[in-house]
Amino acid sequence: MAQQEVGGAPVVQQRGNGLAVAALVVGIVGAAFGLIPITFFIALVLGVIAVALGGPALRAAYRGRGRKVMAWIGTLLGVLAIVLGIVGAVIVNDVFEDTEQELERIERNLERDLDGR
Image (cartoon, rainbow, N blue to C red; front, top):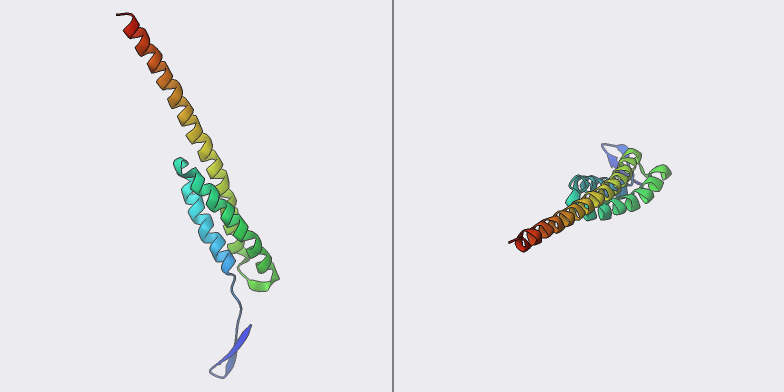
């Protein structure tokens, strides 16, 4: 902590918790990408990064560096981004499987119609 004098009164500046800010920002962006199923992979990566930043941010916050709430929210948003990313992956996978089955059905019907001529 650095001490400065402002108008004759000492002012104590605390060190910040930049990891908490980073976890929050990455968590917000990751959760936003998680809301769009096709971008599940981005949500997963950002979620993991937010959780990875949130852990040390929480440790720093409990050691007196401040921003506990911000560190918690960033970590929780990271977890949410991971969950949304997994849900998005399942949705995209189901869409591709359904599309593949429908195309195979169309192909069978087309072959049957052409053979019946």
